Amino acid sequence: MAPICLLTIPEIPYYINSYLVQRDRLACVLVGKQWRQIFLPLLWRTVSFKSRSWPDQPLEACADFEHAVQENGEFIRHLQTFRLRELQFFLHHCHHLSSLSLRICSERDWPVVLGLVRNNPNLMSLSLTVMANYSPHLLDIFNNLPSLTTLDLTLEAIRQGLTPNVLMHLLKSLRQLQRLSIRANATMPLEVVPHDLAEENDRREHQEQTPFRYLRHLRLTMSGYHRSNLGYIVGLLKRCPSLETVQLPALHRDRLDDICLFFQHRNHHHHHHYHQHVLTSLDLSMLGYVFEDEALAKILAQLQPHSLRHLSLQSTAVGETTLDLLLRRFVSSLQTLDISRSTVHLADPGRWIRAILTHGVELIEFKCGARGEPLGAMVDLEVSPLLLHHRLPEEEEEGRKPSPSSSWWRCTKLQVLQIPLVGCRASPCTHNGACRTLQEQLYRQLGRLCDLRVLDLGIYMLPCSLLAESNCLEWSLAAGLEHLAGLRRLETFCVVGTKHAITVEEVRWMRSHWPRLQKVVGLAYTEAARWMESHWGSSINIY
Image (cartoon, rainbow, N blue to C red; front, top):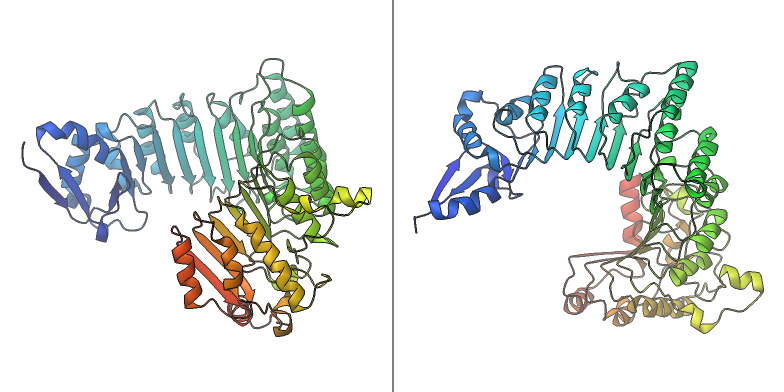
């Protein structure tokens, strides 16, 4: 066998096959003829430049690297680069790219990007960040991507030239597109389109054949769009009969009826040419607090019952109307549910959380609470799964007492659970003895969730009333930990609000019983108060 030769090229910081060499130096392994065909394609399959570490040297100093790219460019399938000078190395030597990630910073970048795209007609994935003014080259780029299935488009600083109808015209050339993500900087809205022109374009688009027949995953993060441009977003939704995953952008509340009509049209009608796919994933987090509880429920009411698998209501105005609809129509089929950072205004929140954990038999990830929000937003969100004896919504309607069998959570598939540890001031169990009993019941419930990877109990989610010493939990964490011995797959454990901080003995117990443990976060009530004051300022009142 020929000896292995190590060739080090200094000051060329980039990745090969996702391995970052220390100090941003490239170590390229060149082997004998017998192994060259095996190792080189693997080493050069992925090339990724770090965005800020390119040395300030003339291109002549990188001749060795350019020669290496010329020899091995045929093996490169995935390229990520952020500067024109880096991109020029690959322009004439890469003809088999399947994914490309790049940034257009000036007018000079457009021709180079167009040349690279033309040399790679089989490109399937493109991540494009545009920081320059619109150029007709963008249309040429899209027209040379007949096989593109994934497009991630970020519009950071386009100040002129790109109107919504131009954007729609560009996207229509991508006939095979399956995944589309569009982000727009909030400070750089698109140009305003006259209302009459927008209506004329919309009518013309309706007469054309559906351009996005294969589009299944759509993510829109465009909070900066002008209100008059939102009609194009709704129009884009109407032209996607195969959508399975949708993230709605920040919309004005007067667009609620349009959004509802879109979902209603999907449920009750089928396109005359294409099969209507069932929507399985919906992200409404970008709607923020503009849409009230009733509006969120109205949107969800248009979806087919038990069709959703993934739902995000993060940072929205979730209330009883939305949660009631969620329990009746979707919770039994959901795999992920996120209502964190939400302004949940509930008179008795414990029963809703208990109902979700009881009926969410398919749940893999569940997050609730006001993570990261100021204390003022936490006061109304004192959610407590400890209120195990509160009646479920259906039990309350029928006047039945909660049965012992219904008190056990049936979400045994959970892998990520984020819930506040202790409950609200309205709880009838305010003395420490009763709280300790409820905590033991909680830990028994958690101990049955053997697939848990992340268990987050109240970190950053303490209500104000629980930061006082008189209301903190006088109980030993180890007494509850013994019920969690079966969580052998646990990787992250967070707990906040105990009387005392986690001890060394308790950490040793965790390591011995949870072999996969990587992170432990434990804050006593005093530490939590100091943490909040340091992160949110001294103006926060700790009661």
